[in-house]
Image: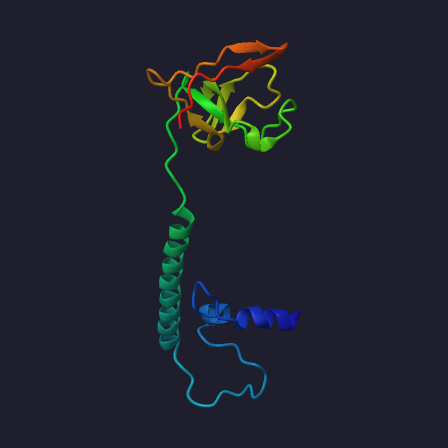
Amino acid sequence: MTSAKFAVNNKTHTATKVSPFMANYGRELRMGGDIRKKGKVESATEFVERIKKVHKKAGTALKKTQKEMKRYADRNKRETEKWKKRDKVLLSTKYLVFKERPVLKLTEKYVGPYAIEEVVSTNAVKLRLLSSMRIHLVVNVSRIVQYREQGKGQKKEEGKPVKVEGIKEWKVEKNLK
């Protein structure tokens, strides 16, 4: 245990750029040997000045590291939308299980629209879901997206089935290619 403490206290920290022992006592940790100090003994004011310099150096290194960490943490962050009661949203199917759809890659990315019943917090909303959906009503905002009404002429119309020998099929009117 003693050698582990020595190793931790003697290693230069990446954030402060000084060892913990140096930050606390203003000098490097000695590895045994001659304990008698050669030379003059420094005064208390000199010691205080030296400790202040070490603390200032460690503080500036910590602030620089803190800014760098914040930059890396915030690079993929985006502002959350301001949700209101009765907003229509689509729910992500990423973590939903559909028994009638065994192949996940053919499942829609979002289902809905569902209305927001209550804004629980900036990160969670309560949705008005169907009773057949067996999930919790409160979901994280990362799992929902704003529902946009389809524009004129964009209505998705289902084709009418054509019976061919008792099997339902759809008749193709025009090939778009």
